[in-house]
Length: 521
Image (cartoon, rainbow, N blue to C red; front, top):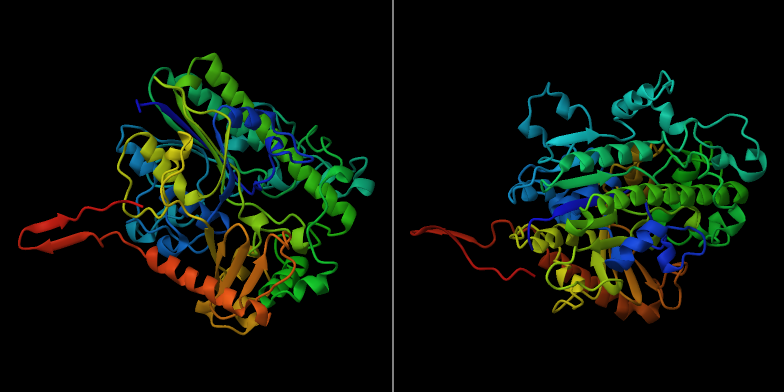
């Protein structure tokens, strides 16, 4: 493909089913629907890990967590791994970032006094033109607001968390009904969009790679008017959960730990987000409102590309880092093993060249966030680094199915630092009576079964065709013992096949260094 522009849009905590083109019963996303109709929508797309830092490490490097080992927010990304920005620089692009990457730099590359290693909200190596915006880095947004005449609170973090006090309807609708103190034209989403529009207007005919990384619909569930009003809590889907917290907790010790901590401590406990039915339904309605706000803003970017003639020369990728529970299984954060936290949207649109590409395709095959980097490189006929665990999705973009394509997806979570990361009152190892190094689980999920393997806790098995809501663990049923063993063996084989391989195909001998030929999977 010729040197086209690349627009890489990420959102945070966007669940995979939340697109109106997928017939979601509540949320409306007309601009993303239009993008999907002009590109390819991957219906069964999954992220590789949670929370944000690890999931983005997988997205940017094409590697599973078992290989990049960024296990938690703030865990450094090893400098020896290449990434999407570094690889695009090799193709002549000067990667630009508007938003954030949630990347912690490798401290071995810096002095102990360097400010770069005193903030976990770092920037992925390779991005040179950077506007860093996140819940930690608010300065740019605050300055922009001041220029527009908005009085920024003394504590700029209040921009993210403070809502209008005494807002009518909160008592009957719930806490998340109150809007943000700023207008829709002044939100962090609007700010990121404004900066993206300025970048595209300035770029002219020069080829560019722009990564627009939105924070929303990530917590706090706080939307500016009219997005807080857009959806009624009576119209949101019912929660997928057991009949009570006590019944839910019986499913597994790890789930019991999460429920106890999520409800009584940390960032999502009841003091911040009340868990009564009214409040939870409104929270979900506000979450959908934030999605439509994002959709409107993404629509502005797509409109500008069309107006200035760049749309037909721009590769567009839209994806989320992970999802969230939002009340399903009585949980809010993306901390468990359920699909709601790992199933994410993915849309890729190629500009037409000599031959028109298929438009409006919906791919049912399983795809993963580790596939994004290999796909972008393959679109530009670039070499795919041997470190990549994912595979190119380009055949799907051409209306074909790749040979020997995966029949299941995998994800993993390392929860050893959950107390610190989520603000919980108790660490999982002590609470669960397991070794600190054993705080992890792996998931293998296909069309019918989902198997969850813990390093030092009992496994889980769900029959998704009979139990789509994942309420009944079959692992302890003797009738499923053989099936549990089968999936445990499949998972072991998967991990063996995906061990880190950077130098595996290099040989050093009398002739010097030789790179042996590899057929990339």
